[in-house]
Image (tube, rainbow, N blue to C red; front, side):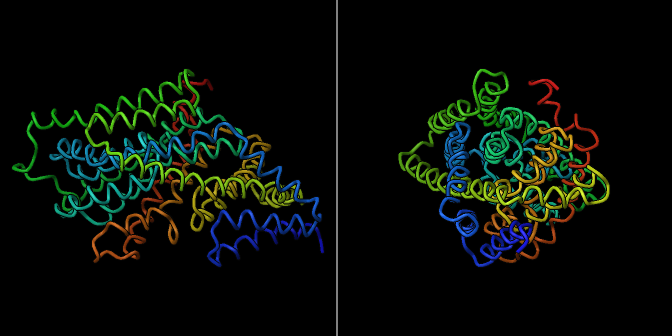
Length: 438
């Protein structure tokens, strides 16, 4: 059998395992082990073990459980509800104001917790009923919740950025800074779309009736809910961007700050701490299995010449290096329709990223595009995770197919964001350039 067929077989067996319903972490661990022993004998397990050990022996990954703990504690402290009620009171006179408030709160929650599930579920429970109450168009109210919740994947602290940085040896601090600027770009695009639609057709997103709008005293009183999260963001991210703390140290401070937030708001309970620790352990263990398995997969895949096969195939495509870029974007977008984002990073980044860097593309620029593509994956049918998070909190008369039909326009807006970053890199990287230099 030609050796070039083995990399293709590895991917084929991987997808067969996923289609059979086996957990991605165990499939990623089992497939390379089988191929290593089959092709190289027992001694081939050394390549397997070295690949897994090399990835797990990475100090940056210690930030993973800390960021997860921070997110869970804040979620259980009711931060989403506090922030939404604050912006809800300010957005009353504006057409589309509730949807805009949803997107802005999603961005802030993303900057505080970095976990998509918390954003989508929290906003789905709090913002969606209010927009339904005021007869907002369902395409806008469900879409705004979907994209707002997924901003937590892009705006730091972001768990997937820590994983991507560990896999590609790219500075997590630089990724965080780029996530700030690209997250702001997408927030502006989402809000702009909502406001334009509301301006063209006021019936889609009506303003609140005058007798239901908050007065100035209520508006300024509501801003108190924003102060503590803002301080947590500024201190945690400021310490990382200024170089005063590593991402891991910033994550430790964020976890401590989350406990302080719960104490100050009088929502701290020992049961909350116990549940947060258990969820952190469960999610961290899942991520660790996927990282170890994917790293072993990458090591064996490279050992059988898989990276060269991929490179040769990509370079054979028309369009030169920009054709390879377009193919890489399409490849990740396609995988994002079926794979969980952490698994997508661990599977695609070790193959695609080195290839694009060797072709002369800037690593941070490509990493930012990769992160925006991951955000798109969260809302891409049929298996985008945010679609299922939202379905869990919508009224019974809204089916999963109804949610699927909402997504194309919002995916298109995100692709516009990717095109803007491709052709105007500064729009997505200005924060990284400001803190770390161009």
